[in-house]
Image 1 (spheres, rainbow, N blue to C red):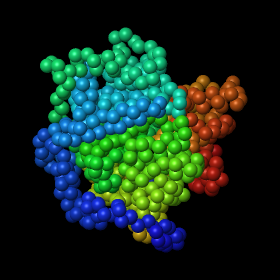
Image 2: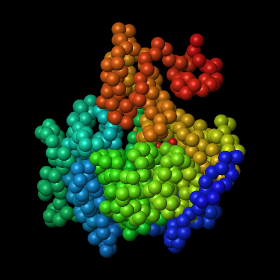
Image 3: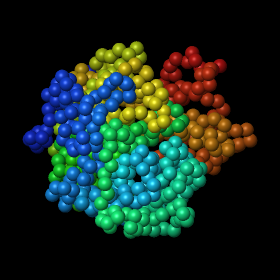
Image 4: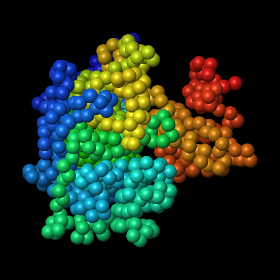
Length: 638
Ligand code: PRX
């Protein structure tokens, strides 16, 4: 480690370890960036040629309808043909695709053959229920192996999965079922989390009652506690899988993989933005496959002999791209667990790394900070020597947590890949490669073929050290294609702030060595423990309570969570402030959105700062709460 002066502040510079550099597979960023700069289409075509296509593409990138970019136009493909089918015709059919450990201690493993068989059978079940190419299927499950099975089964038959994170609750789920017009919902009777059961079926029932479009509900038995099953609508997963419909007419467990256009939608995933209504980001079969496969291979040097652990939830983009699709594309073994990092003890993670011989751990800073609290003794009890690389995602990692992760978990051997990306980007965008010299807290540089910049208000690039808006100036294959049913919002949200470039919603700066430092969101999105929530969603949950007239929510810094939700509420006349009411309001938000949206603090106020046109000025609330200058108040109402 050496020290280097950047913007007057000394910053540690961590050189890549010789072990990381020794691998012949490590890519040189500068070299690859230059290749991509000279021929972007050629660069991505070479990556795409590593996968199997039913029919080759005619054009790599079609920008004639920008910003509705199209990739690998004319190509016929199915991501599942590359995640499963192609491995099953090689020796890899016998290697582990998935290892799963439940919170209650049980372990399940799937070889590529076994996973493929389960996916084929469930795909047959879905087809028999009338699910066709292009239909949307909502998946609302705990972290169990049947979740990736359900995703892959949908993709195999060309249905579009819409996974709703199992930590969301009734209203969040209802909105997502309704917006996607799903006829089929796949759920669990319950899920284990921190020693308790999350009532997934009960929440589904209430959400489905509010939504009305759902014809079939498939329920995976996980906890075996009593749940009501509605006759003619609800079916147990294990019952369906034992029926003849799970098999072909000749009785075998195969299923034909649907031939898709490269641009056909693979999935939609709801994420929070500036308005109250979450938007469904749409990803495609072809470009997404090439983007996630390439980035996992290059950033984590992931090889088929590796055991990879992405500790996210499959219900978020991190899990879609890097628990399910990318590791399977590479023929690696993906590890997945149910539960929480600190239950039953704060060594759960470290014991699993030792037990399963994990080679790469990819986790969120909030989890690292949470585990750091318990001290070094917990990880030091375990043999972590199988680790080769570490990763970070979801929010900026503070240098203190970075150094702890590097020293205590990686034993100063494992480089940390701090990957900046979004639901919308599908794949890592700003990230080190194993050969990159690292600065704790910086996501370093753009991935080859990705052009990132920082703009000022006027749309001009800012100088070194200056803060501005992070933008992406060139399309990339795993980019979102649109917002489901709302193409105008896609254009308006991402491509209008600075015409022709993609607006990320983040602020950042670049130091004099060109390293990117992500600062945070500039819109009404709050990252709580790395989870993305919209202030408007929290506010609308609050005002749906009978005692609340108006509400405003902001994020304030929090040691472990990164940000915590603070809400300001104006009560309806007749409602009275009591501690009990505050607790009731918090419980109401949890019931409507989920535990991740639980406000840290709710304050009853008489007034909210608003513009003359009636918009709540959240930045003023935030400045006041932090004791900072309130800035320009000319638009503030009298
Ligand atoms: O603010 C950035 C932050 O997470 C946002 C995207 O959130 P989401 O769509 O939920 O995807 C999270 C997982 C990819 C970004 O706009 N973010 C993500 N990764 C980082 C980050 N902030 C700083 N450093 C990162 N590595």
